[in-house]
Image 1 (cartoon, rainbow, N blue to C red):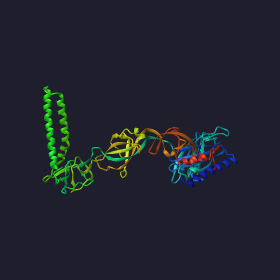
Image 2: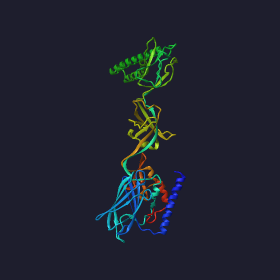
Image 3: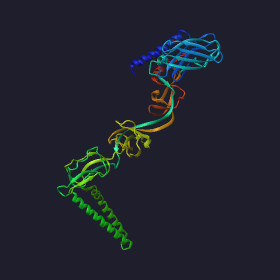
Length: 504
């Protein structure tokens, strides 16, 4: 909002207040009655004199389109007052005096309650509004039920002419489900045990006969990744691997035989029980030494020519990084490439430590990733970290996410939202309808077409641009949804005087 807009609005408010004050000081007005009626299309705010038989009563009608909260600028407007008994009184106002403002005088013949039908029949806008209980009373009799007389001290005057010139809207609070959310930054990371660095367990030369797979290539379990040619020196090569494997295998066989022999001796009570325990430990140690050599021998299978060995993929996945190049001499244990299985990935969310207790299930979480449309959901809650990051004061939370099409790439950043509370039938208002003052929240309730009240409310959940109203407001009360700031300015600049009805 620009300073020029604020100054203009203040001038409108102050001039309006001064005009009313001058008018009230110079010309005593008759008591004005007021009523406000809403249809699906129109708001009718009507000010009128107390009708008496045989006398003309002035009627001032303000018509606002609810589609944009601008004045109805065309006529005619046909007013039909229908009594309980007798003939109706009909008046037609061909056009508004100014956009939105229709003025007329009506003479009634008898007392009693009338029902008003106000029919707008313009070229671009039409509607029919019904106003009940227009009471025609004898002079000095009881007035009708319309509001009038002295106003409450908290009433705020904000005229239709002011409402129509700004972005303004009123409406009823809505009952709807509402959920509150907490947000956190996140990252797509590989699933544990779905990432492997493939190394060669023997020394050799990375053969030029089989090119290493390029980054991004999908490989299947058991697929040949590389061919290792024999090294110039046999040290660390396949010969040494085979010798080490045979030696370890023999040790396992010897340990197995010793274990069987010790078990028989103990069963025959020819040796203490400790003999079996020692043999069992020796067998376990021999098997542990054989295990990596056994895996290496299975991963390396003979190639097409003498001494060449092939390195195969340990599981299906995508090659994400090359760590060497064809033709290089490599030592045993040298890494060749890195494979990641991305058919399922993890979402690592960095949740603020103060909110970690609210995250208990994957069903609470949704996340968005730049470049991918729509919100995504994880399929499984994996784990919550045990430590708080001392710099960011966050705790990592892991979720599993299916990724069959490979749209999610490891390393992508994500924005994660957690549902922290939910109410199925909440009374809600847009966030912009609420104002805060010294830690308390309030809204502006429309009492009549041009009269508003400041009402303190208590809010509950907040999410999706909506706020739950826990107390302070009924569902049948209309609230300023847009333009409340201007009503707030009006509350500081003017007060509603007695019978703030005004002539146009």
